[in-house]
Length: 295
Image 1 (cartoon, rainbow, N blue to C red):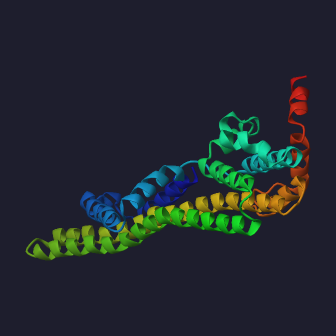
Image 2: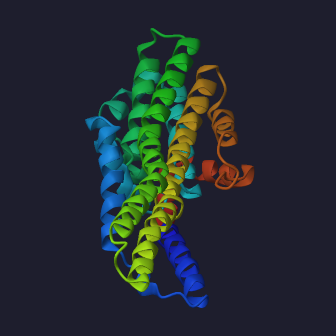
Image 3: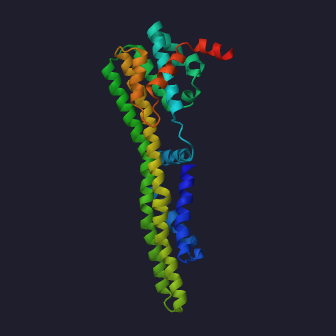
């Protein structure tokens, strides 16, 4: 929604300001310039990326136009889920989590948090490391190092679509110059025409430079920034899981471990200590809470 709003602001201010100076909008309508700039930009994108990068970029684009799913409610769900898992392992032993992690969709604990179940990156990260912890063959430092490697890999993979889009955006001004030069060449080749027609041809050629810069900095390059922000949100969730699980492994009680995880979150979505404490009080006895709600 914000992306579309931003596009509207860009178009309204640029073309509105142009019209206020007495410019004719019809002169800016040059389909051939769009074909040259857009086609060359897409072609350069294909040349500069392998199949995996192209597929990843195309898969990431629709996500840009959806609202971010990483809200305070999502963070509360994550912390509550981790709390319940750690509390169960502390009371019944780590092996009591085997059924939960082998089939999360049928787990009573995981089923209480459908937003976590619907996020394959988050779900796999939690389940995989709980499985490693249960195996008992790795110490805390080894698990932490492995978590860091996986988070770094995620960041590198997420940077590929953002970098590809940024590179394509950076190429648009240059292709705009290419389109303008070709228009000027066409105008000079028509030097025998009347001055009015020659002036129109040169004006049409200059539209190429205008479109290249506008498309680059008003439409394409900002998308790379949004992709990086979305990637950072996912990374922050993974870091929250990492800190919480490691705190539990180091012997801290579930409420303290969850508090450690809370501290890693961005301040804009981070629940307060009181909010988290009240939420933890509610999930400590979910069956009792459900009975109260039904009554």
